[in-house]
Image (cartoon, rainbow, N blue to C red):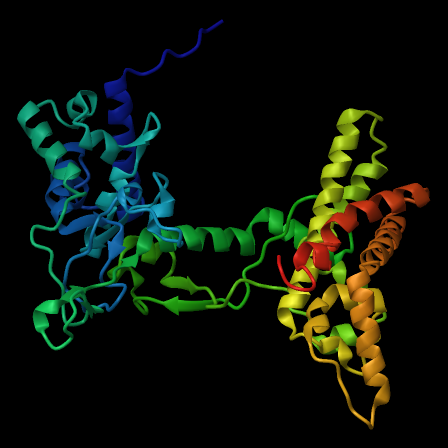
Length: 453
């Protein structure tokens, strides 16, 4: 029985990887046909490396590409390690950390050199080994030490700062006032925003995975087939594709070429927010009809029902886990109330179309109690209605009524999920949980009637 093949010496692993890349290039260029000796000679091991070391100076590894701003711009692109950038709360290149894609600009005819330097050996790119002056890689490049060192230095220079950073009339520029006198030219700092190709690559990769990834494809198919699916579904909507480079995206950069020139633009919108209109709520028999669609309420109710349907073993752990979910549901309900109150002006429940129960009006429109009492001879009932509203609000019993209605609503949601045995004690338990979150606007907590707080 033949034993396992011993691992190649490290120098040989480098040499084999380099030779395999050069052979692949030869096959791609000569396409397997008989070629004249002069063409074939260019793909000899040493000859190709010598030529690549010469051509590497025609390209540069960067993270921020100038030509993405305008293809005729002739200024400097930059290589900035994302982890070294200042940290901000906003999304930017600094969030990429050490996991970022380097781009390459320069002569498109020399991009094969970059592909060569991306060849991995022992989990790292040849470029990374070049930059650390790895002695085994050096030996693999050439038996002549001086030649090998020269090539190593040339290849490592793919990542280099510009000798003299420069801008260009085609680049986007803006004058930023740094002083106090806008009439003085020396009070301005000239800024040139640069396109972060590394960040664009990360965004592009995530969007492509979302649109064409296997998991999302399965989720879409499950939705069409009306079948359950146990993984989340993601989607990017209202995208715009900006084409860079026209028919020659490689003239912008290597990563732009890999993206086919497509750079996605996300819609400039505020974060999504649930914003019920007053008309919608006023015409409903209960605000709880809209509660299930607020924030994460639907997911929380599903989490609770799934947990109870799993019939967990009774005990402290089960009780604590259930109470944690219930408290999150109660907090979501409190946020629902705050969202409605923040959305509408005080007194919106005075509308004659409002069909909400009185306790829910008191919950969702508490500042109505601060308004002046209406006095209109043509509508005498308005005065009494406002007096009754204020009296009921200050008595505070409405909070218990809202909590009871909330308990009934939650029980109904769990019943829909298949929990037919949800009984009155559970409803009262969840009602008590809700009272804590609902009752905060009661006068004794929110304000002290008659003056001092």
